[in-house]
Length: 117
Image (tube, rainbow, N blue to C red):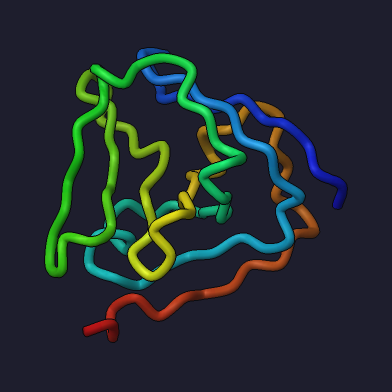
């Protein structure tokens, strides 16, 4: 897949962002928070992520080592993205928040977050 720009937003539209990705794979995670939010994610370097609006509409949640930074919209509660624990210069983007993003044909890899100490 060729690199493409996608616009993303939460449900209410308070948070908007854009990413550039070639989406080589999508990931799921079995850690205690990801299993509950059931998101399908694409990994994007911070240089290919831009928050367009809504910084003040985001709330942050951290747990365990407090390295990963999970962001949620304060108004609608949607999880649009997080800063990754293992590679904090990357974001995990919830692909269900991206306009026009087609998941068909992209391999999905299950990551093992539950066992991370």
